[in-house]
Structure formats: C-alpha cells, structure tokens
Image (cartoon, rainbow, N blue to C red):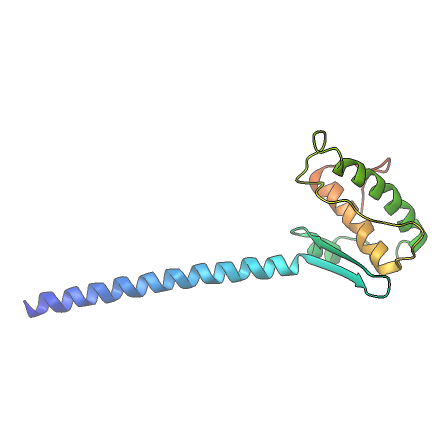
Length: 147
C-alpha cells in the first residue's frame, strides 16, 4: 500500500509539473505576440506641428526596412505629390464603407497640403501606401504600386 501511495504522489507531481510548463508556453506565446505587435507599430510624431501618425499593420515595419527604397531615393516633392493622390483616394474609400472594405479603410487621414511635414513623414506615409496596395491588392491611384 505504501508503494501505491508513493506512485500516486509521483503521478500527481508529474501531472502538476506538466500543467505548469504548458502555462509557461502560453505566456511565452503571448509575450512574443505582444513584442511582434510593438515591432509592427511605426509611430511618427512632431510636437511642434502637433501631429502624429501611428501605423499598425503586421509586417509593415519589416517591409519598410527590408523592401522599401532607401531614404533619399525619392525627393520629398515626389512623395508629397503621390501622398496627396493616395490620401484623397483613401479618404474617399473611408466614407464609402458599403463599397469598400471598412476593415481596410478604417480612419480618414488628415493630410494638409499646406503643411510641410518633412521628409521622414512623407517617406513613411508614401511607403505605407505602396505596402498597403501590394499587400491587399488595392489600387489607390493611377500608378501601379511598385518598389
């Protein structure tokens, strides 16, 4: 009987140990997902002009670093011109949820053509539009999106 109780205690300990390691794996998965979410967030802010752009799209941060043309490849004027066209089309799609997927076009973009947002903002916004069009097979203007 003593041996049976030792075996029973051993089985319970093994079972309890296995349950704890499963919980730890779930926690690690949650942490990895949170880290991935944070790394896929691109934030551009300028307190002087009081604006902020937050882009949360899985894969965009990686794409920006690995696939997009490097900074300096396009002029600021080129990107501003394209961004104006893309923003107008984007905003038109936001206000037509019955025609365009509201999960893709959630919020309007307030892009004032009279404000000089600088190179970095235009670069990241322009590249997001290229990434978005390629990833979701969308066309936001007369130009074929390409890298």
